[in-house]
Picture 1 (tube, rainbow, N blue to C red):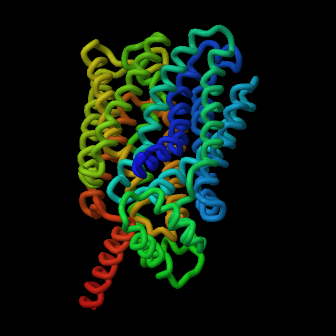
Picture 2: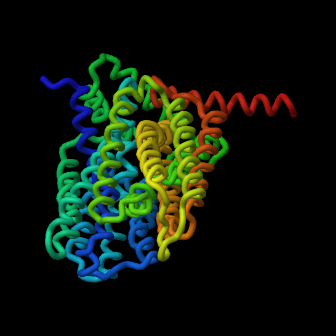
Picture 3: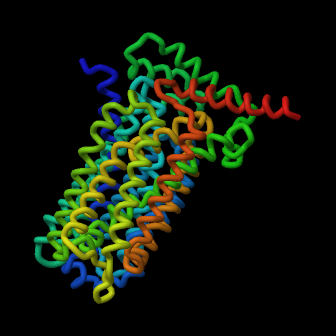
Length: 474
């Protein structure tokens, strides 16, 4: 008989296909736009147009993620993920069949709507379904599948680049569409979130889900704890404005901050435009830069595995601070090397000397590894779990909006920035990662081994303590 823990892990793997969809697109889109076959079908995209095309998915995803809170509360977490998967599949099918740049742009915007809808809700769903002892491991399954998708996307694009004609760049989109359909169809068979069921007053169903997915006999206590957390509210229906109420502003600001600065780390610039970065660092041929990009996907995946296994032992604070400092050092090294050895050749950035080239390549890989074991795994889980159940869907929607809007801005400007300044982007990302580490050290409470209700009590006590100190001073 399959244990309840194994069942939860299986559900986590399936729902996290939403992350794999994101990874497949992230890993392949840079390579797709650099293929000669793509140029023959669509035409060579100028730097500005390339930035618009690659980044537009983040714009529609950010808008969709803002609506995902309403959808997740109204339809349920599972059906919000399912509808996102279907919309993503439609967008990928349209991308695979596009014949002009405007068609590709519209298809990518549709894909973003589906991606924003599904990926925004997965972490909420898994945090609410999993028991606290494995919540970190289960919720970070999303990041694991993202890294699997990124690595797969790089190598699918590398393999399909050998095909003749437009099928070379259409194949990655076909693969994405197939996985979107798999995600959507499988969501019919997963349970509702027990906390969403309690929120809707369906207590018997919530109890049934808890009994099926808990090994302990403490189902009644957990159910009472959830009900108490949800019923201790004066406002019957959560609203976006309540997320910023005095009672929640501290945790809301912290969640939005770390989700936004996660993207100011520049990680998606490295992943989206990996072929460009490796060409600048000394891999001028298409196949060599594609292969180097694929290796970065493998590094990303391998460094995610230990974090996936030990996130509940490490906690949240140490990976955020340690990973951030390590990434800032990598960026400082890359920026310094480009400042000393970088130059423009026929309008393209190049770095002189084999030793500096290999040093930059090594530092890019070290950066990716440090991001994978730390920020990639911890930030989304932490930002989700610090919010109360009643506000979680809407709060996470705002956090994801901030994440994707910053990501959109960075990804849109990255091609022009990378070609305009050899070292500037890296010094910017260095400053952002270092600043985030300092903020996490000063203002971030640890949530390791605490239930969602205990985390809520932790923030309530801190808020009450701050107010008491203020009243004393007054």
